[in-house]
Length: 229
Image (cartoon, rainbow, N blue to C red):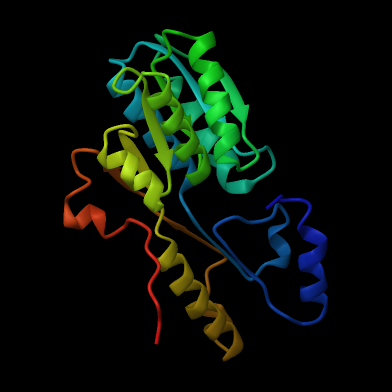
C-alpha cells in the first residue's frame, strides 16, 4: 500500500462523491480523506527497540527487516525503532533489509544477516510475514535464544513462534477495533454527523512476550478469524 501511488485511485472515489476513510495504512495526502484510523506505529517501533535492548543488556548490534519503503505503517515502525535505539549508545543498527512482504525472502535475508554478523543480538521484523520468516531463520541457524526476534502483528504462525520462544516479543495492533471504528465513522458521515468523526485516530498497541502469551488478557489480542452469522 504505497502512500503516494494510491492517491490518484482514491481521488476517483472522492470526485465521485464517495467519502473515504483509511484504516491501518494510509496515504500522504490526508486532505482527501475523511478520517485516518491506525495503530501508533512509531510507539510500536520504539517498544520493539526497548525489548531488544533489554534482551541484549543495552549492548550489541541489531538489524531491521522491513517490507519496502513508502508504506506509511511500516515506515513509521522503522522510524520509531531507529529513534528509540539512539537512547542506547552501546547498540548499533548494522543493517536494514526489505523482504517485499515475503516470508521466504525474509527467511533468506535473516540467514544472510546471521552469517554476516555472527554476534548479532536482535532483529526487528516490522510485519507478520517478516516476523514469520525471521523467526524460522533463527531456528534454522541454531540461534534460538541467542538472537532476539521482535515481531509485529499476531497472526497464528507468529503466535506459535512466540509460544516456542523463537519470537520473544510481538507488538500487536487491534485490527478489530480499527474495523469497528471505521464502520462507526462511516455511519456518522453518511447520517449527517460528520462533525463527530476525528480527522485522525491512533490506537495503542499491545505487547505480548513469551512469558505473557498464556495470559488471557494478552491472548485475547491474538489475531483470529470469526464467522459472523
